[in-house]
Structures are given as C-alpha cells and as structure tokens.
Length: 91
Image 1 (cartoon, helix red, strand yellow):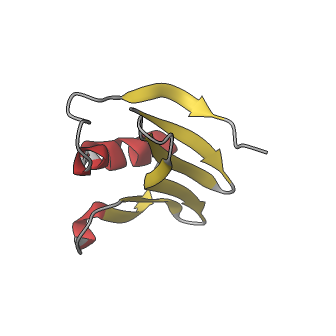
Image 2 (image 1 turned 90 degrees about the vertical axis):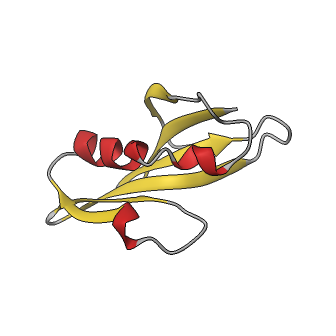
C-alpha cells in the first residue's frame, strides 16, 4: 500500500492505493480559497475536528491532514508514511 499527495484543481488530495486491487481512495484533501487553505482528513464517522479552514500555507494544511493518519482506517496500513513530494494530476 502507498499514500501520496496528488495535484488537483485548486488544491491537492491525499490518496491511498490498496495493494490487492490498486484501488485509489481519497483520504484527505487541501484546497486553496481566498482566505488561505481548507483541509480535511476523511473518517468513517462524523468528526468536525478533522477539517479546518483558513490555514496559512499549503504545507501547514498538508501537515494538518497527515496528523490524523487517515490511512490507518484501513487494515494493513500501520507504519505507512506518505510519499514525499506531490504527483501531477492525471490527464
């Protein structure tokens, strides 16, 4: 399994790729707004603390998302870390 950031229109998304099926699952994201960056980390339940608006930089927004380790919602991901860098958007 692997986790990486991928470019997206007006932001980036955090993607988890499952080994068994090569399925890509969005587990977090960051988008640029007029007031900074909005960030969210997905969860199976309702947790408003996993989203924040108006973050100053994209790096801070990525760190916010990664701090929740949203990939750990899936089995076999313990010890996984996010790949460095950001991949370009698929065309």
